[in-house]
Length: 152
Image 1 (cartoon, rainbow, N blue to C red):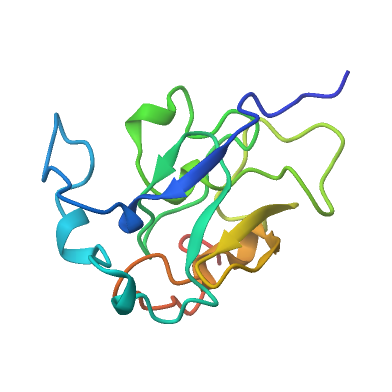
Image 2: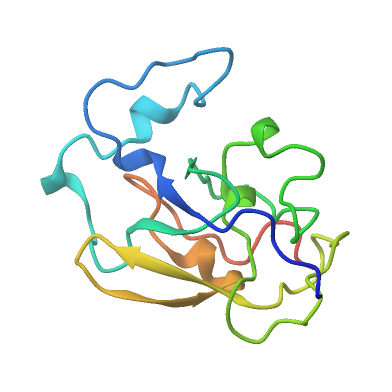
């Protein structure tokens, strides 16, 4: 049997949580969460590129523009998904053009294989190549990076 991604679930965009989000609970979620959170539905712009949830290693994530890909596309962020809160939780090649055996050790300087399924605020759902995760609007005032961090 090919190497399978261990989490068969999805991750919620943490910046969409409603109500009060604690600034820190032993560092979780990141202290910048409140300032970046959308706060109310009318502040979500644009809804066509703002993910609600998608395939992930963990139940939620707070990606930022400087996040790198997971060092292990099979199990996520190295030895523990609890050690990071951002994009590494979302870089799971469950769909698209990916190898039968998902790469364990993965250099952040290489193009990622595969894609993830995502649902967006406007209700659309689709398959997004992993390399395009940084092109989505994850939080209020997100600035799309010119290229994925650590890509040459």
